[in-house]
Length: 602
Image (cartoon, rainbow, N blue to C red; front, side):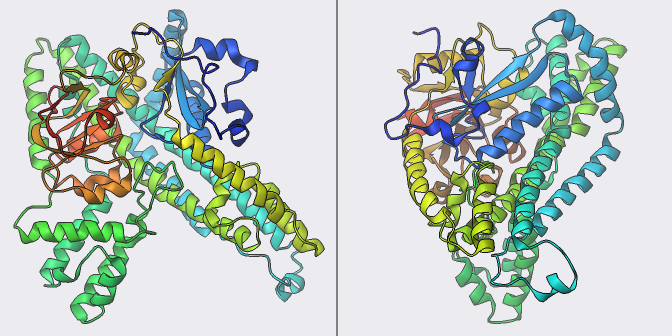
């Protein structure tokens, strides 16, 4: 078995992808300028958020996200053992490398600063969090107000009579700049509380491991379970709509054809009442991505209403069979309270028990943010960003620059102003823009590059792995551990028919596998099947009520997939590395969410 992964400088460019580096910022690709540094670092592919090749404009979001993550860790809160997480693109795929603080003296020196800075947030969490909600909704409101319009044949007379002194072309440039800055603000706000939410949980986690070295990771995670967050609200809205349809006696009108369903609802008052409830749920709760929110291509419920309508149809069928749609909150809370009581009884002295209670209490206060922010940033906020970019893309398409609106995402963020100016310049001067010819050649070239990058099989990691991986975010969020690295180096063969991963959500289930590689495939899931996927998204929750268990390739015990499965009472094993490669649809599986073992039974 090899003891290292390929160097990023050894990796070959796929045929047809030559020149791919031009599609990303010069500072985020591997280069000879920093070869010694980059070759000395261990990099892993972020399959939790970006399992596929990333188009140039989409990389904007990742650039912002990782930069703000590092900013809060390193410059705001001064988290003692960690700096930022570095980012590089290789053949269109994103690789990450956490940067630790290696000097014990420096770690010790950072502790008082962290205690003061983080302590202020922890002590004032409710007030600061309320202010955060105002800020994030303010950014969302500004995003909703952005409006790109084609440049007019003539400026309106009001521009003259009001003496504005600027025209439509300048306003379009201003609007794009504002869109980029609002996207940056969205991600700055994203990490204001997130790092502290994880830090409080990790502090509680470490304390539990200190006093009970053999305590299972899952037992600690279950002590903070039973959260009620807005991330679950879209699914709850679908359940309410299903119940309303049954109560009104019109459940048989609901099908996965949203347009047909809504047309059928117009037949009588009961149907109109239901359609009104649908409209009320639509905003904001259908600003919900079918993926991670990091790809413009992820389908959003508001734009693909057949998706939520199909889930409602499934819920109506469950109600018809007398089944409950409720999450098992009472059972989750009871198990949480039982574990806390039993472990607390094992503590001999009052001081340690008080410390345990204090750390648990803080973790429970701050931990819900770890999931709640996801709706406002990755889903609602990013849905608006993609929507506004498409609006601009359609204008440039109508002007002959592109073949379709989504072609705009093949431009880097700093190329879009050039395209806008070209459009503006041609309109202002009264001559044809160069864009139709220039982008008419360049877009097909970039489409070919992206097609080649999507077909490339990305290695899970690059460089020499450390002997032991202890960096907590890598382990808990991304599921990168010493064991997973060994599995990656050993390849995907599993002669005994078993896979190992994280015991992400308790329970044991058996059933036929359904391998789902994209969000579009979840509609194929049948009752009692076991979902096997690279990762899951929060918007997949409506199918959790009919499947038996979940198995993912990536993600640690505190990944979104793991947390959501625990909150829905669904057995899950995450971070198996090779689940989608080794398991075939139809094979019978046994998933043990208590031990992290997945067994192929036939």
